[in-house]
Length: 150
Image (cartoon, rainbow, N blue to C red; front, top):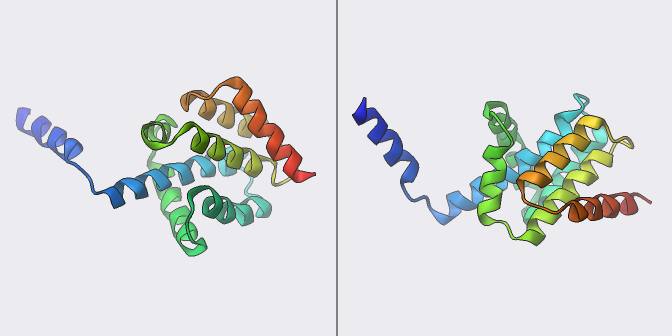
């Protein structure tokens, strides 16, 4: 029993490469965006079309990389037990501005199909709390997303 615990702790405390760390961060952000897409249980074409663009803009990656990341994030999201798994990774590395950009992208996805469902709203608000963003920042990002639609 102690040997198993020791192996578990060693496997989770080993240093990871900077590339792997960056990939995990991008995966966490993509998973958060997918939470919004799947929150209302309706996969709108507008949302799926916007998702790669938001990833390329928010995370500075190529569109092909974004599409691959989306597929990987779908699998990671299916195995996740809570939002904390993703927000913990993001909190460790993202600046406040990067967190705001992620939240803005989430709002843009939520409004992409022309309707904000209560589930999308709840996911975004919960995410903002877990990312330690102020309520004023949440509202500011929502207003920017709405203004971009007009």
